[in-house]
Structures are given as C-alpha cells and as structure tokens.
Amino acid sequence: MNKINLRQLLEKHFNKSELRDICFELDIDFENLPGQTKRDKVRELITFCHRHGSSPKLQTNLRKLRPAVDWPDIADEPPYTPPATASNIEKRGGGINISGGKVTIKGD
Image (cartoon, rainbow, N blue to C red; front, side, top):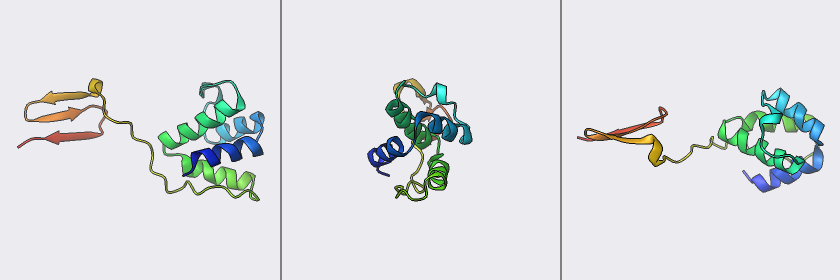
C-alpha cells in the first residue's frame, strides 16, 4: 500500500466532516485520533486502520463514497504488528515468553 498516495487522495477528496462520517462508519472515534488538522486526522486514520486490520473496510468505504477516484489497493495489506520490546519479553526456564499472546518460543 502506498500510504502517501492514499493520504493525498483522502485529503483531496474529503473534508473534515466527511472524514468524521467515515470514522463513524468504521466505528472509530474521530476525536481520539491524534492531531488537530485534517492532514493529521487523515494520517492517523490510515495508521489506525493499518494497525487494527481494518484497511479493507476503509478501502470499501472510500470506493463506495468516491467511485471515480483511483484508490490504491490496500485490501491485501497485513495488519501492523509492533516489534517486541524489552518490556514485554520475559525469559522463563528454557524459553522466552512474549506477553500479549503473540509469540511463545520454547527451548529444548
């Protein structure tokens, strides 16, 4: 997915009120998206959807609302998985446990 292209298209084709409507349809709290400007909100909406695996829903809405726009294909993009940090890695016995239910690696 080309996030820059998607951001530019969203900024060009939707006003702030329409972005609120898109967030409402996706069950995203517009006010909780960081930033004040339209550009900030667009960037954070894209990031939020990517992290929560809702980019396909965003794409469907955008294509429905603005069918004449050549939206980039974002449906196949896997959701963002943050890297493990020292705060969520714990060495136990013969293995390492990564909290959050993501990965457990056990030794011999």
